[in-house]
Length: 530
Image (cartoon, rainbow, N blue to C red):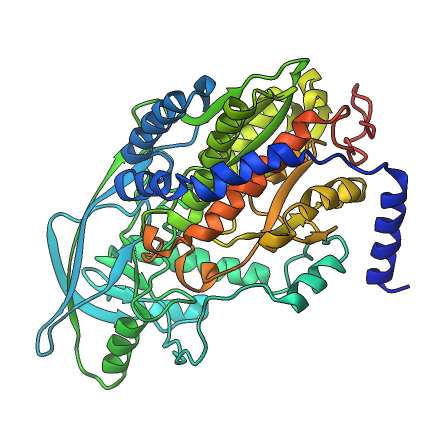
């Protein structure tokens, strides 16, 4: 049987198993008014990015942004606004100044960005550029004694193709149908047979680089053009450990725009010497003994106030831009959803039955650290990342909704393998057909904070969004700025999220749950559906 046919049967049975879900048209009307006609999402996003971006976890800027967000939520009228510590994270890092120039017979300013946790230089440094052309441990021997005081290129030329079609995209009907018919995702396979040899070469390469002490290691990334630079974190420390650990030596590491990298590479291949100057000022921080903070706020419930509906997004960002599409888009939409709900309550006089709790996470970019810690403290017994049991409050959470795929409008929901929510979500989405939100897929999607909740047996969901130019242009790049947020999309997203949160809070029962799998030999019983 085809997977698409099986999914259709499952969803059909699920629809038959539940009575028609209630949709409150009057509440949705108020939500639409405050979300679509009286939106404040773009002003919230501007504050989050222009004033308080970037928000790299561990940096002084995210501490300032957190203080602002706490006050912002309090001023909105949220209750129980507070931060919760998690960690230890390791030392923080902040870029203070950077510039790079090609000097000599042909001068030009270079577009480049340091990788996070790169160490600073001692003022301006100048040196020749050298391409390290080696693919085996033996070939590295030729570079011993030749790299000190140099700028070392690690990559070959990357061919740049001109854009004949715009990089921004919407999901079309075919895309959405493919998602709707998809099955649940499967895990990835094992490493290939060459994994060990690659690791051996990598260890030998970085050992050589730290012994030689070049001015900087330079790459050009695997994507980005037209001056767009995707800069990540430094590869490793001198001791081979985590660059966030205290007292680790980290060689300066820089990602250069592909056009400038390619030009320098071609010059070297023509035996034309190239010199670079660089000034990199950065600082490490560890004022709170490596502890970081999540931001939590609530709208109190009424008759079911001990139960909770959670919604959130990661607040931290990467450092090259101001963290707009990743993820002020999600954080601003969630804050806006909270504002919409407060205004709706004020206008209608109707209060939520369950407590509504917003969470803005930090440490997501380093591995969902903030949300995983929160789930482990409140809801789950964990052995590392293995679930060994659940805590009493786990049963009190009806759902967690997350947004973290850029600025694109919501087109539906990834149900994360939970077919029983299909008839419920279908009714809620049908109220927003005019806003192009129609698709439900049984598929899982990962790499963001709903995963922590889903792994603990709590219904956790990420929304399907239009991709726009998230992967092609803005995600972790120097172009991740407010200007690339789409106002109408964020208004639509915040409105739909507010409706989902509200309707989840008003149900007689919590959302249905998947069967919870817990590692054997524990004292905790398995979860059940409700």
